[in-house]
Length: 110
Image 1: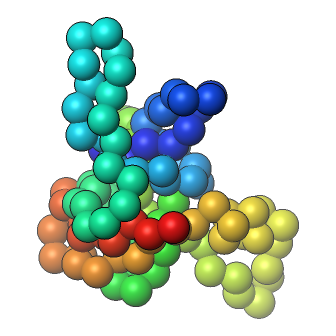
Image 2 (image 1 turned 180 degrees about the vertical axis):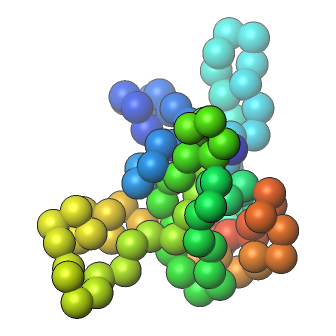
């Protein structure tokens, strides 16, 4: 699942448009967790989300508004708005494999 920062040293499942910090790997009994923040990961695409090879990612919602999913970042178009500019700044990584929407291949970089 895709995660974002919710406070200092704290992550939460990514909501729609959130910056994706990485992939949640494991949650320990004391609620400490492991997050992969660099390199190749697979992340699930959100419900009805567009995922395109070569595009950057942001958080998305899954079925029943579940958090922890991804989608393409909004690309500025003819009606470029402040919200699109804000989302573009949060986008990271690059989608490299869209063959399976439950396991979209992404390279997370700085």
